[in-house]
Amino acid sequence: MAFLNGHGNKIGVAGHKDEIILDEENAALTKSKIVYALSCDSLDELGPISVKIGAKAYIGYKASFMIVRDPSRGSSPQKDKNALPFRRACNVLINALVFGNTVGRSIELTKKEYTRSIKSYGTSEDDPYGDIPLIRFALAWDLEFLDMCGDSNSFFNWVFILNRAFQI
Image (cartoon, rainbow, N blue to C red; front, side):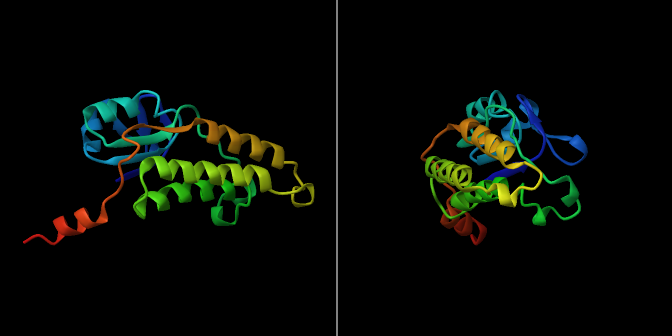
């Protein structure tokens, strides 16, 4: 399994200092893996390229990934209430995969989390700066564009990994 978190476009995902970490040239690194790219647009072209080369599944966004952040929390992102529902949804996906759910089920659980957040996020009393409508819009956007290509029944197999790790 590979989790990528960075800026992206249709043909690549960038990491630290916007250095490309995955594109068509090195997509073979995804062979036999489940990839979750938390980045804009990469599902559009890079996802199918990775699956064609041998990735089990590629999870990502068919359009820009939206997030609303509180600019006053740049140095303490864990305290950013605006970003919380986005982090929560992404964590649901990662945890679902790590604990052996299929890719399809993991996406389903994540979409339920997005929907729950859209329905329940904040009130005007919690929103002195008027961010709630934008947050709900961004959550709905991410819900709409989260998708995958490849085998939706693939899953992360801890037993296989552990058996290979302890082979003599």
